[in-house]
Length: 289
Picture (cartoon, rainbow, N blue to C red):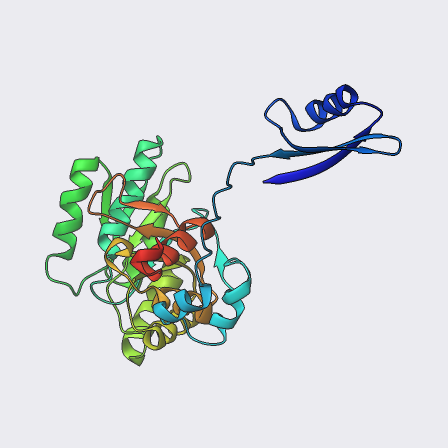
């Protein structure tokens, strides 16, 4: 309740002041004579304001996700796009999709190609995985549906010629073989493919990995030339510390997130707002949501 005192020469004059100030709902709770007129005490019942929703405890959220130090300290009070980089994929050069086996590289290539097709751009897809059984056949099945040309280039010599076949500067998507960047032979093989294609390297990494291991993978692929990262299985992972660790350790720009099982809508831009929402949604106790 809001109380206020008014003084005037007469009661009608005091009442006029009350109505003008507090409105017609004001209540008169007292009047008394004073030396120069009257004194009126008026009251107004104010509607209760809803309490603001409690702010999630960001420290607890980051601890839940296993975000390593010193990244966690930087994110406790600051924005995500301070210590982390965000960006969009660039198709000015062939895009080589790299990552460990089973990360979701082939599906990511198909999703990117589908997005380009839906926007009226016809890409060229290069299958560079000569190790995984049936890898080219799997990609061929997708490209037939899309009506996109597929070129098989499992070695640097063939790869060097493949991008020259693109027309009118069409985007080139290269599905690289799954590799262990800590194995010198596999790292050298991937480095040779990247050099032959003069490609921009994008690391595809599944969410939910151990943060320490993911950070080491981010650094290793960055050493091979990766400058951006696509996160897969974001819809299936509750702890995203590995994703943040890989991006931070490798200075990789977060670009896209794989969600769901769909092809046309299974890849969405990975923006600071989108990532913060995912962190808070999975890292906040259920009774606080």
